[in-house]
Length: 74
Image 1: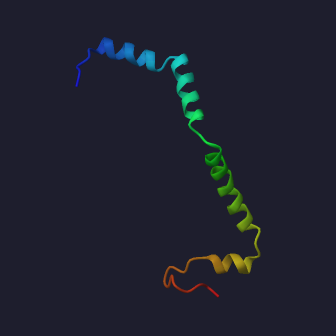
Image 2: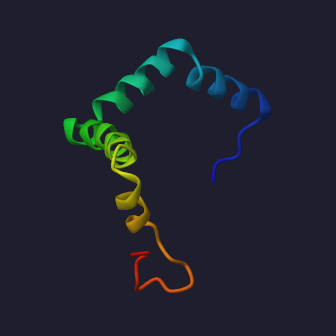
Image 3: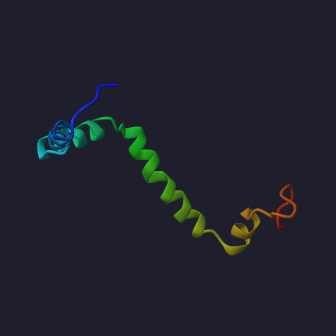
């Protein structure tokens, strides 16, 4: 491990936190996201929303019974 003086650490932090560096970090982050990742992020809330639109008796049958997890509420 290389020991750095406080002044060197401050200079390194300034370079890492500069606007140009932050823009590059955001670009790298965004370029690493695939269409598949975006699709998964969008589908999860959509599925939750659609489950909430189901009739009450179906939603109740989907609940987990903590005392007896093997049997449903129906």
